[in-house]
Length: 382
Image (cartoon, rainbow, N blue to C red; front, side):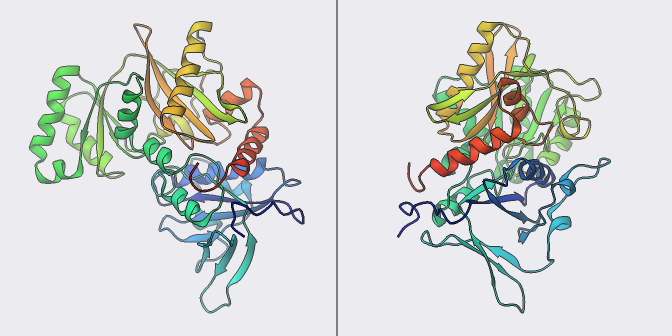
């Protein structure tokens, strides 16, 4: 009997595999997110299997110890610190009729870890949030929290995200893309392309990896002198880079969550300017814990508008489960969408859970709703 038609077993609680870490530069933030999710899952309702992916890509059985997954004294956690073994790996099934996970270690008989009913992939960035893991889980016929392959890929690649939003009538800011071959084959022409863009839209510019998150690899460039260094920094995270003009205005975020009757938006939040940082970068978000304002001080009309736009962005990219949509409210009163995150930060200080808490859902209720939505959703094409 296939996994699409087999009934949920009544002999045991559903087992949730929380998959975290990964090969991207957002590895540590994924570990922090996993700690918060593990603390929040209702253990009377679900069994839990923590699976960490090391920075080299090894799938490891991880300790179920959320307290070890936090940022402490500016030190970032890793899967390597939590793995129960330095060798071997966890193997997910590839047969949709079999959801049993196996631990394989050198010189030992493979150990069955039991069936997995749903995966909570709290991976951020490439090799996890970008559709790669989602495709593997689709092949295995295992339900998972969050968006499918297409939406995950669109949500990760800022160029194609903007192209999709534009085609659905959502306003985006000016940008230019430098593809790997352009910089590698003719850096002078690529540099001129950016300088011409600056000539049209003005300095400063933001140079960023096209497929990264958590503000990794982003540099604010005030003039030509800092451009090459900013490009190389972005390319450390992704060979394709995106260059955006400065949008003057307020940074507004809004959460979207899938309910039984469709997606709904949370109260919005505002990210105020951070005096110690040029912009809302990684250190401001996670190390210095820059506060956001929830709810954002907007008019009722502005609140309704940004909520509607967030849901439109969710639908435009064919998202499922959850999304955080980030906007600029420009000086002329227009909301311009900057990006969406299909697996937004879920740490205790992250804006997505904070917005839903003010809207009326606790962190634990939010996690529970996401798991229930994933278990309701059929596997395969939908």
